[in-house]
Length: 97
Image (spheres, rainbow, N blue to C red):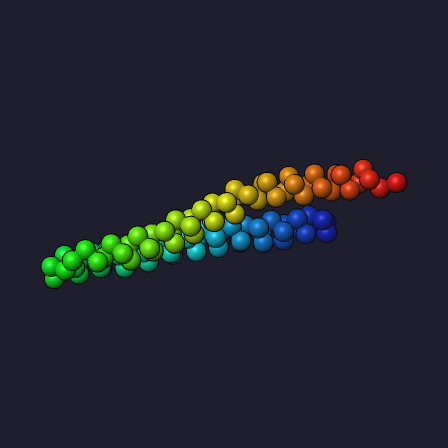
């Protein structure tokens, strides 16, 4: 295995690990959201509580939606970053004498 191949494999592994961490972070956030809000709904339904349970649902739901968008943008944006980086490298090489 050449040095370039080892570097590429290490970089590929770092990128894959970063992407998995993004996905797992969102998945954990989603599971906690469902568990807590499901528990709140069940608790207020059994005890005959009011509709206050909607406030944490909407507030946390907004935070979860933002987390999901950030995750999606980071996962989809990797290709955009690479294309922009390649374009900048190409432009810099053309400027050199």
